[in-house]
Structures are given as structure tokens and as C-alpha cells.
Length: 620
Figure 1 (cartoon, rainbow, N blue to C red):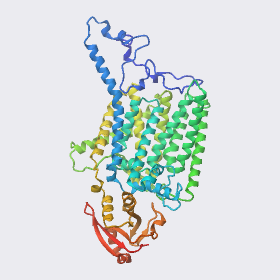
Figure 2: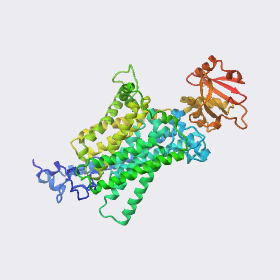
Figure 3: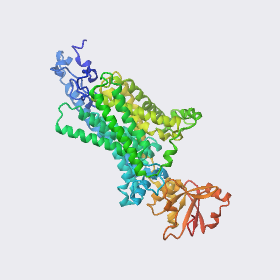
């Protein structure tokens, strides 16, 4: 048969629209041909017919002598059911994903709470006590004046240094991250069903492993903040681009464009007060995406007004980056973040090969791959690991496939896809430089920003391949299956996590036992001190110390100098030591052991013993 007999066999695509001349404005939003909005349909909708023809004019049954009256109502009923399902299912999917993450933050996260999760709330506490964004009396792990501590600062006056404040701050951050992601996708002209589906998948990917859950739902540091800033910055940029390409520019559009531009500049300034880490994950990827997208647009003359406008925007944003970093230095006023600075150095060249060898396994384990030696290949644990491996490979390969299809992205949404793609590769390149040539390879969670950008680029590419009816449409649909299984697995694992923190979290157990002994102020090493203070709601104040053969010393990590001074009204002080720490002091015959007024032993549910020494005076 020819295309004249069945014209719906060849669906006109927006990507097939020829480019306009350089003098014309090519950055117009996608204008569908023969359909009102092809991207608005989650599954492929009915075939598109040429103008002036009705579906009944094209159906083979219309020229057949055999009547089919009974089949028509069935087809219409099935189509109605499918369309209703596609309208309702994506929002329900997003609501379920939101509920699962919120449930994790409220309940199971307490069982995985530890000292690293306390940094954000301690920064908020330092700001609250000093009245300054960066307290000169606090030893910071890293400096993030414009960060998650501001969210927890909203609740600190009401709930104090407590798990309630921590939980509410993380809930607010999680909702903000979801909102800015949906906003960014909306500015890319996405239908709400694709937005809901993509956001739900993204949330489940970030909940795939214990380490990912800690990075994004346990506390807010530069990696999670950088992704939030990146999505929000891209949303503002895409919004500005959408306003600029409006054909019938009115006073309202001009005002809206100016306000969006100002908001984008101010946002860059504030975000870049977080210094190098924010610039690496947020500012440079956006600048690189904007610059490379224009540079590689060969159909637009180099001196075209679109390139000139982009160059002016780049210069403005570059000034904002420098201004933000200078403002951050003013706020810091000489205070440094020792932990973040320590991982910003080059390592010996002889270690680079070792770092490269660790990369594949680090990527897999970050996405939840478990070590199951001795398990049968077809066991349940093995199947789940295969799903994780398959999804990890998809997230690694699809951005490469998206890059190969780079010239096929047309129109305004295509331009935004190209910017997003370059932003991903910039984040990936900068993180990998630090991973392969620096000290980032010590932990797999340093790759978490790449997981985020790779996930979004992969989902954007799958959506493009499906809705544009490309030759990869069926393959793209097939790749959605392991991703969906991966999300179900993540959701199921969240539901299986224990909800009683006192049974699984040693810090909760130690806190309860020390409170039963009537103790209120003392010292312990980092992995116990800060967590126990937050868990107790600041009723049991435990300060961070270092314990080695030289004795017990004040720590300078996530602490304040005033914590080691004599506390008004405090009658006794305690020192919590695990077995190894106690043996180190005993072997060194530390005189501190003989100063203890009394001592007792605590045992957690895992059988680990802890020695508690109680003193009638401060040990410092």
C-alpha cells in the first residue's frame, strides 16, 4: 500500500521541520504539525491524519462491505479507559513516591541517623547562637552560608537542636528539590504526566541505596545543594529563554523578562557564596551548557543577535559568580571549612590508575549493588542485583546515546535539551577529575551529582525518543522496564527498613542509657558525640574529642571552643569510650583514668561494650 492509502503510517514529526533562515527567530517553541500537542501524550496517541480528513475517511472498514457495528464501541471504550489511566496514573505515581520519601525521612531515617547527618543542624545552631551566617566561634566542615542550614533555622527557635528540627528541615529540602525539578521540566514544555513520572522515578533513584538516602534525605551538603541549585538555575534560564522568543512582545512580557533576568543574577550571586563546590556543581555546568549550545549551533552565524545575547548573558552570570564568591569570603571573615578543603587537592600520579579501577564498582555500589558472595545466580538477591546492574548501565550509557542524537533536537525544547546535556557532561567531567586525579575516590558517594544529572538526562532522552516517534521508540520503551523494576525495588526496600530506631541505632541506645544514669554533659569521639546530642534534643550534651596514645584532646571538627570550658551549674562530666579507645588510654597509663570518680560499662544490642568514666570536674 502507498502512503496515500494509509497516510497515518508515516507520522509527521516536529523534528522534520526545516530550519528557518538565520534572519528568522528559530528559537520558537515546538509547533506541532497535525496534532495539537504531541508531547502532551504519555503513550503514543492515535495516528495523525492530514488536514481536511477525518479518521472515518481513512479507515479501511469505511470502504469494506462488511459492517462492524459491535467492534466500534469496544474500541472506543478501551481507548477511553487507556486515556483515563494515562491521565490519573502519573500523578498517583508521584504522590506515592513523595509519600515514600516523606515516610523514610520521618521514620526509617532515624535508624540510619549518625554523626555525619548532624552537620546541617549544627551549622543552623551556630548561626542561631551567634546571630551570623557563619559563626567565628565554630569549626566548620565546609562553608555553606546559603544552604540547608537556613531551612532548619526556620524550625530551630521552636524545636531547638532536636530530631524534630532535623526532620522538618529535610522534609522541606526534599519538597523544594522535587518542586524545582518539576518547574525545570515544565519550562522545557513537558506535559504534566511526563513531569510526574520523571519526578517519581528520580526520587526513587535517589533512594536506591543507604548512601544516596543519606546524601539527599539525611542532610544537605554541597552535593545535594548543588543539584538543587542546578535545577533551579536551569529553570530560571529556560524561563528567560521562553520569554525572549515570544513573538508578540508586550510590556508585560518585557517586565517579566527583566524580573526573571534579575532573579537569575541574584540567584547566581547567592549560590556562589558557597564557594568552589557550588561553582563546580551549579554555576560552571550552566555556563558551559549555555556557551557550548551556542558555539556548536553551526546554522546560526557567529555574530548573529542570538549569539550576542547569549554572550551578554554569559558575561552577566560570570560577574555574578565572582561577586558571589567575594560575598562568601566577606561572610566567612577568615573562617575556613577544613574538611572540604582537604579533598580539593591533587594526589600522586601513581594513584590515578587505582582510582580509575575503583570507578565502575563505586558507580554500581552507589546505586545499591550489594556484595552477595555465595548466592545462587538465580536467587532473589541475585535477581535484584541484576536489576541494579542493568539500571546502572542504562544511566551510564543513555547520556552517551543522547549526545549522539544531538543534531536531532529541534526547536526551543531541543535547545534546552542540548543545554541540559552539556550541563550533565560538565558536572561529570569536573567530578571525575577530582575522583581520578584527586582525593574524591575515597568514597563512592562523591559520584552522587553524576547520578542525578545522568538520571535526568536519561529520562529526558527516553521521553524524546518515545514522543518524537523516532526509530529508537521501541528500544526506549523497552529500556523503561528495568528502570521501573529498579524504582519498585527502591520503594520496597524503603518499606522494609525498620522503624524503631532504638532497636537498630546504637546512638539511640547509648543516649537512652546515659540519660538513665542521670548524666547531662560529657565527651565522646565524633561518631557518638554530635549524634547523641541531637537525638536527646540537646538534653544530653556530648562534645567531640580525639582519643589516642597522647590522651584525650579537644576536637576542632564541627565544634565550638566554648564547649570545652567549665559549664555553669554542671556538677559532673563523663567520658564515653569504646573498648579500643579505653585500651589505648590504659596502655599509655593515662592519668585521666585515675581521676574518674566512678565508672560503669554499657552494652548495646550488638554486644559492643562501652566504658563510661564520670568526673567531678571538667577534664579540660
